[in-house]
Length: 52
Image (cartoon, rainbow, N blue to C red; front, side):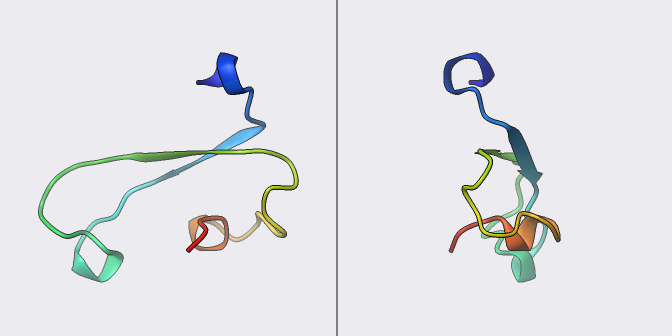
């Protein structure tokens, strides 16, 4: 992905437990590519960069 789409950075996240949105017990890692300017303020961690 990095060579093909050339993102400027990545957000890596896990959902653990129902309060975090996990529907059933399993392991998964979410890798979200980002580009400069794709979100207004990328600071502050995962909650501020994941679009809803």
